[in-house]
Length: 102
Image (cartoon, rainbow, N blue to C red; front, side):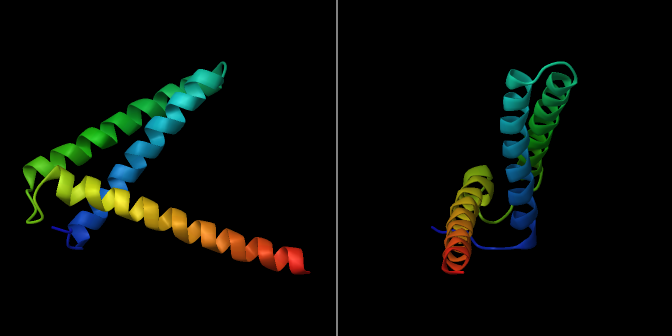
């Protein structure tokens, strides 16, 4: 069954995307950075994990009608990320096409 859209799911998807982004960027910054950059990367990683745990706790505390963590958060997150990627790619191609024609 496909997910249903509501504000609660929207907020949880935003939190899940923030958590994923912060964890990935934190790992990269901590690994490739040096000095203060490495410290910032570790802080980003920790904040990402905390936001991820908060998202998980919110899905456990307030069971939404869509069926829990997978159907309520992860499935819409994947859907929105794919849709965002397609939209950005199309917009970028239109932009590049317009720039190359001028």
